[in-house]
Image (cartoon, rainbow, N blue to C red):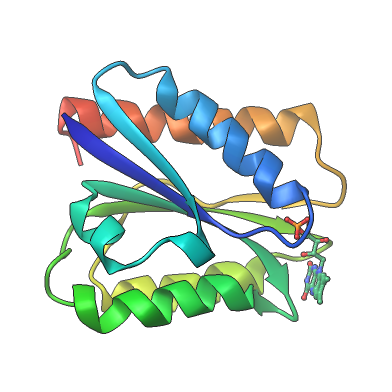
Length: 151
Ligand SMILES: Cc1cc2nc3c(=O)[nH]c(=O)nc-3n(C[C@H](O)[C@H](O)[C@H](O)COP(=O)(O)O)c2cc1C
């Protein structure tokens, strides 16, 4: 059974709510094992064991959150060269921008040679049902792609 890892940080509740929606969508796919971890609790072994990864972070000061950066710093050299081509996607909770978080994550995962398989979902301002729906669809599409082996 393929394994999907969802790793996220939240400083409040918004990105956590987005992560729950992504997880809900992914769990609709029966043939996938879904593992959800906060950045602080995840490490290289989790990434190495995953067939695909969805990252979630708030945008803080025009960048990914410090905890997401810490996670990526801890896994980078342990996983470099060992996860080439594995699919990833990203969701971001932000106030009014979100682009700095996207750019900063994309630069680092490029170094890990992860493959982007979905456009980032960016939740601006207040969380709406439409944003949560986008998150759920992200999880569902990602899990379906993993299950079918299309990535
Ligand atoms: C320290 C700090 C810095 C922030 N910087 C940005 C920013 O650069 N751009 C932006 O759009 N929102 C910014 N925000 C707003 C957060 O991204 C937004 O409130 C987000 O939804 C928080 O998600 P969370 O509740 O999961 O922590 C910042 C918030 C904090 C607390």
